Amino acid sequence: MNFSIKLFRVMGIPIELHVTFILFLAVIIGLSLINNNIFWAVIFILLFVSVVLHELGHSYVAKKYGVRIEKILLLPIGGVAMMDRIPKEGELKIGIAGPLVSFIIGIALFVISQFFDVNVDGYPLLYTLSLLNLMLGSFNLIPAFPMDGGRILRAILSKKYGYLKSTKIAANIGKSLALIMLILGLLSLNIILILVSLFVYVGADQESKMIEIEEIFRNIKARDIMTPNPVCVNPDMSIEEFLDFMLKHKYFGYPVVENGELVGCIGINNIYRKEGIVRDYMQKPVVVDENADINEILKKLVYADRIFVVEDGKLKGVISKTDVLRAMNILELKEELG
Ligand SMILES: [Zn+2]
Image (cartoon, rainbow, N blue to C red):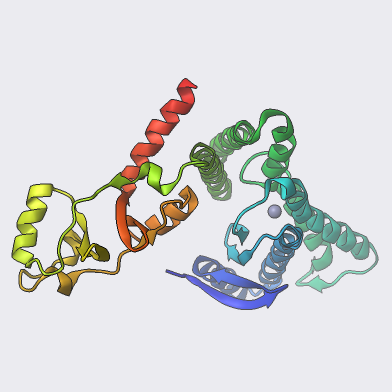
């Protein structure tokens, strides 16, 4: 599902507004009109132009490392450049590029505003915007995930401690910082601080979990975690028979196999009447090669409860979300025990 609206492309990258951003913008504009003061609405829009430029800074360098950038998405809390991956060797430069853009804009506007400024409703526009850009650059340099500073810190630490450990250090700093912000936010009843603290906590947590999974699973292939020789059903089996079959085997989903080839899949959620045969209800199966890596498996499991491991059209095994979780727990234990 896509809750965003595409504006235009810059450097081939679509700039998209998330629906929450549009609502937020509408509220700001509404408040400005009610108060008969357009300054904050103008500043808000220009701040997000600055955020886009900041993200384009990251994207420009990332592209040099061959990163594909899906889009730049604007949320009320900031912007994200969605990259398919961040290459370890480029992380330092990619991380610095965004804040660098913000600092250059901030300093340039500050200098200009000393000679000339635009007054909107009695406020100096360029001066205010210069401060906001300097704040944007500084905030992002805080050395904690998910801020750019966290990436920069990890890139520096990972030369010495390795990628996984550096990620954990940067994530722990991020989480501690989030807790401090949360406490300060609660004490001062500052909603924005509370929201930012949650954003930082979730971001730090996600990043460290993702990297942990990636490191642990790095060499794991589909064939290592699949359940081999799964129970299959024939497409001509009647639904009444199939219900008894499910009761006997107690899985929620099954591959449908005809003449030794995988032709579909069927599960408890596909049946809504007891008339007909399996063929009438079966779905197109999601398949992976037995050499598929964990990234590919996880991506496909987002859209399917179970995926099928196939070689030359022949079914080799099944991977369900539970299989991945179990394999992860076992591999984690293995890693801990050394
Ligand atoms: Zn950034």
